[in-house]
Structure formats: structure tokens, C-alpha cells
Image 1 (spheres, rainbow over the protein chains, first blue to last red):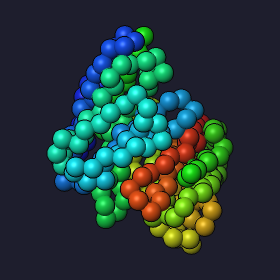
Image 2 (cartoon, each protein chain N blue to C red; image 1 turned 90 degrees about the vertical axis):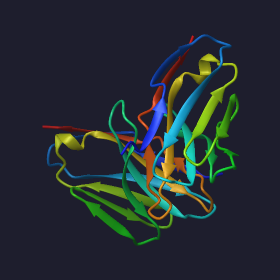
Image 3 (cartoon, rainbow over the protein chains, first blue to last red; image 1 turned 135 degrees about the horizontal axis):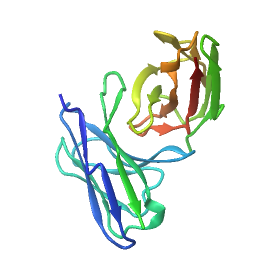
Image 4 (tube, helix red, strand yellow; image 1 turned 120 degrees about the vertical axis):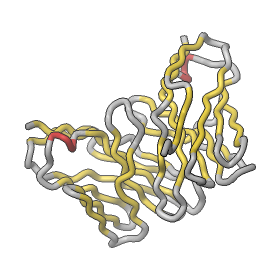
Length: 112
Length: 109
């Protein structure tokens, strides 16, 4: 039972480079989320997808794009990375009946 | 705009010394309030969901309570393995969840 799987776990980019963080869940959840976590700031919502085919902006969407490829997969793209995007990124999906969020292990991104 | 404020930022406890963490919130409507535990280098782990004022939930040494404006996480007789960052999150009347900055708890033996 894999739960929520994120790749890559670590990545170093140069300013201006692009990359995509991949996320997949095998729990048949409808809603999926991308958060970033910075020291002292908790988890901040970047984008979420309430259901397949829909995406919405969270608190800090600037500089990011997302794609809900199908029910299982929700990817996060940085088109032109900036040092301010150095962070730990978490993908999550939600069990609708209990409200429990299931998180991936995180992707640690450094932009030089 | 939804806001979640957790206090204190850090809490140092002696083993067996009970204490409480606070989560105050302002939301347009509350679908649920959640507590998570996060260990260093890992993703948050679900603890509780509270849906309405007056509700309480317990799990081992942890007890969560909810009022109309805040939630408390009580840690009774903590052990070193309870050391972690505890996160509070609120879900308003859609599918967005907003997290507080967390309280880092350190329990010394």
C-alpha cells in the first residue's frame, strides 16, 4: 500500500531552470493538494484539485502551474525556478469521509 | 481570509509534565479542524478531526478539544517519543485546508 508517492525526493536547480514534481496516490481520493513548507511558516497551500479535471489556486500560486492528469496523478511545475522557491514540497490527498490528509514524504528543492 | 495561529511556537517539557497547545482560527465557515504530528524530515501524520464546538477526541496521551474560536491539544504525562511538531489546520466550506505554523514540542527524559 504505497499511499502518496512523490518524486523526486531531492533536486537542485539553477535559477531559471524548469522542473516538474510528480505525485501519485493509490487510495482513489478525489481531492489532491500541493503545499510548500518553509521554516517558521508552516505549510502553505500552492494549488489544489477538488476533483479530476479541476484545479484551483491556494495561498501562494505565483511561479507554479499544476496538472491533474487523472484521478491518481497531480503534478506541480516550476517554469522558471527562483531562489525563493527553495523549499520542501508536499503532495497530499484527502479521505473525504474522515477528512484525513495523507501526505507524501516530501520533495526537497534547492534553487541556486 | 482564513487564518490559523498556533501558540506557543516552541514548548520544552520534562517527561511527565502535562501541557496544552493552542490553535486559534478565523474562517468563513468550518467544515473541520485537524491536528497533525510531524517528525523531522517526514510528512505530517494525521491525529484528529474535530467538526463542531464541544467535540473532544483522544488518542493515547493526546486529547483535542474544540470551541467556536480555538482548539487545544492537551498532552498528558508526555514521553520523549511525543517530541514532534504539532500542526493545526482548518477546512472552511470548500476543499481548501489552511495550516498554522506549528508548535514544536521537546520532551526531555
